[in-house]
Length: 399
Ligand code: CTP
Image 1 (cartoon, rainbow, N blue to C red):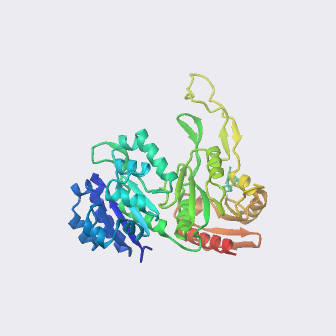
Image 2 (cartoon, rainbow, N blue to C red):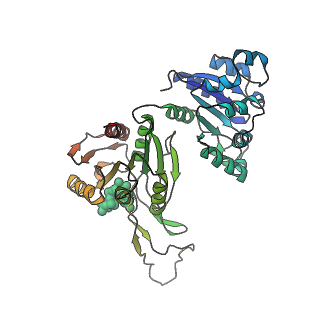
Image 3 (cartoon, rainbow, N blue to C red):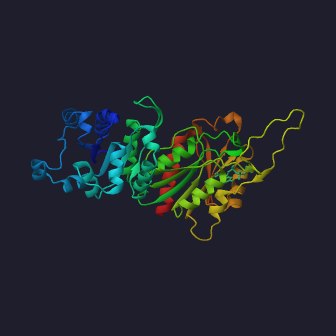
């Protein structure tokens, strides 16, 4: 997927810099050419010789190297690439980028470039959570910089939490997605996915068995065809795909707000298993068991129907609105009725009876219902269902 692409890899000075050598190998395996740039601090962790040997390219290190400037000026260097990847992006590098500093080669290249930039932050958890880094990350995202990671886990400093650099395969996948071009390049698609959690009190909630696997696969397939994807996800089991904008939500009402904020879009796919109800008057206090008293009665209130709301928009409705119909009986008939009732263009009906193993499983058996009729697809992996759907969406938007 990266064949013929040139990546300028800026390595910041953090302990995760050792992973940059593996990153160079994996990017090259995918067909990319990699030009490494080491900051002065990065050289404390990896040697220019190893970076150069693995990249089979010259390594750039210094802004004031006259030989480099004569061969290729920093402006040209920053623009010769298809993508700039900063891995690891330290707190300091992020701060420089967010504030437009240009006092060394790495920061100057980042200022001078007109190509897309992706960063893989890596730092101590407190540094990641520091308000300054939060501000810088938000600023960079608003400036159009793509962030991959950080992941959560044990850190080299002995602490635990978010701040670990994303794993190399994830960075490679994100780079591939950022560079993907295909029939959906220039198109924006909103995808909902996963379950929602509806609080009963601060410690309990109502949920469902959706893993988020199908919605995640759809978002990944759309991004692979070049779409800009906004992925609105409830608390799912599977991690979100790389190369998409992730909006995490808990409740159906939050999901609706995130979808509305993501519009306008060329298409919207509603794969989330949204809870139909939330608990009225869920409060900030834990419901206590009282000896001898009756169990508490939960009053349920209907949630907004996100699919129906978007499909029914009079202004700004995405030209293609796709829903799912999770059914256990009379699948096609129920799904046809649901398509009409919700006002969407397409419905993918699936039988989620316990015997099918679809809910939470790796496969799906769907029937695509459009105005033209019903089309049953064979039982396929969720990845294959996603790829088929993404291609159908591309065809529909092209036509
Ligand atoms: N959906 C939604 N918002 C809701 C409920 C459902 O956006 N509050 C969307 C789902 O993402 C899916 C479609 O509507 O694309 C159908 O979901 P499903 O659970 O099958 O339908 P329901 O409307 O809940 O109908 P029922 O439970 O009666 O079958």
